[in-house]
Image (cartoon, rainbow, N blue to C red; front, side):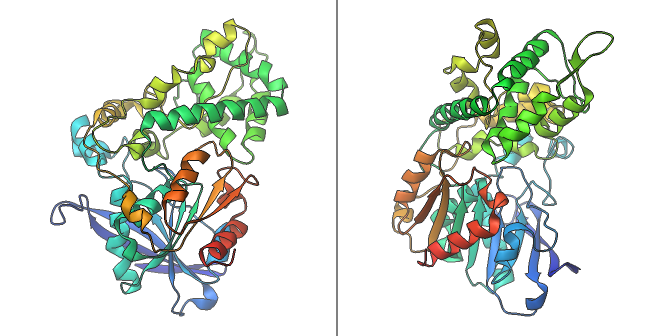
Length: 432
């Protein structure tokens, strides 16, 4: 454990040993990393704890400098713990480099089956008594972190004093097909809004997709840019400034060269930064598993459901002179062909997609009897989390108070963190 300072804060790095499988506490253990942050002026104060669970899956906790964003508001009254969820950041990272230590694809898949919300919550409950003296703490869950928070309410509400959720109320019952049928309809609306804002991008996107259909393009890091991979840049459309970022990306796509028009190095480099999963491979490997409950396999649900939405077929759109639609928050088998960070994990991901023994994540009866104060920001027409699913879940959790807003997209906590956190705290305390 080491402590150091940044402007206005004192940081302490913690490492914990937790069971890989909490059902077998005497078995293999892994290391969990978490960073404690407290305001310099309150470093010795006896403050309540707030633990932050990042979105994802597959992302480590944000690395703040000083009192940036929502953290500054939280530090007014909390000692904050930024947890790298297992397999991310510095918490026994799981990726193409480390997973072969487990063995082949079968062993890797069995290992990664322990990296969902249920295990993340058990990790939190393992470390909470060591830090708080067994006092309950506040959980702030962003996106997938909100999924984890709802599981926390189902599995260990005694560890919670308050729960705050931003863009992360999952359906309690929807299967993966339900999730993606709702998702593709939302993504189509985001496309329509983007092209209405930037009609010149219709021609630009079509030109790029047509070029990629005829010419193999390999990005600087080795990523193969197919038309389908290009369409997945639509993941940007779920953030507040994403439509503008996509527009600027498309406007610089081509240069004149001695061999004719070609994608510019600047364009390819920028696309690489947006599409590579090298820094967060578990987002791809476990993405559909976060929805799995029971014996129903995910079986590449997004790929199967996409076939029900032919308007997302780039070749058909080009042939019919229709706008090429971008896709978004979905993972497909071809991701594991295009991305060099994922290629070695394709068989592992396939085995997870076939798995039929996923434990249930949510206890509807326990949530209906909830006594923990809960507040949730629900972003109207959120591209990542279906609003109707979120509202249904909100109605299923006793006492949950909602803030439904169209001021922000899914990244509201990042875009206007102090205001969002302040509003949720007020709601949870009955002041909003």
